[in-house]
Image (cartoon, rainbow, N blue to C red; front, side, top):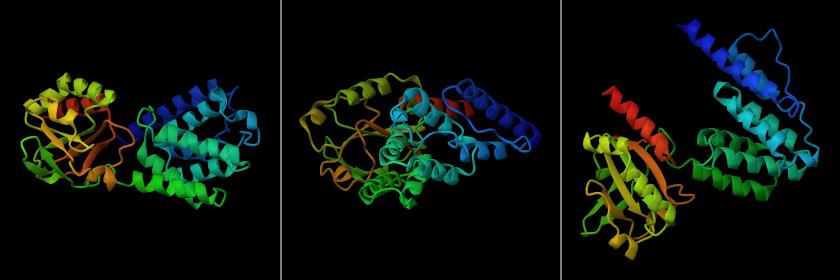
Length: 298
């Protein structure tokens, strides 16, 4: 079984390699020594030496989608197979520091691809790895590090696998509760502002989702809808499915105390019965895939 797993890992790495080779006219890749036969060793070598042929001193490459940005995207795509992530990011940022504009560009690419929820490569844990390397780099200006420290502190809140922060809420009838009083195998927190168009769209997607509705009907999921903008008229008049907990953070504590990372509304968090984060800043598709798999496993 171990040999089979190693074989498939090698196949995956080689597939990524061939895709990169097809783009080599645009981005020159390093040659992985033939003596490295273990998949992890090959992946580590490729990641650590990935940027060796890239001309960080060429300012024309700043903002170049075909070369620099595509190269960065491919770099991230091999990270799941890399164990030397710290070293790989450190080498990349060290190279980019040949001029301040290039370094800022790579910092921006990092946020765009790893932090923005719409990114197909969104990975907050990897973003934390990158931020830590930037913060120990002597080449990053002090004022930029202040922004990065804030980004790191924000990302460290309510991480996947960690217990989510508790908060209080009030319902329309005046009944009060807290997150930790909600009991279910899984809890879906829907942070929203009823007046925002994106929230209205997500609400309708959730209401019409077969996977979400089945999980609710099976008694394994509760939806906690939280208006984070205080007691607004739009919250008072909005209608939600009767099965949902229709709540409001009347004192806006979640926002004012920054208990959760809410870059833009709406935001979804999926928790387990112990209030540990299963999915953070997730989307309907990822949520449905997870719930469908859990349903089949029961």
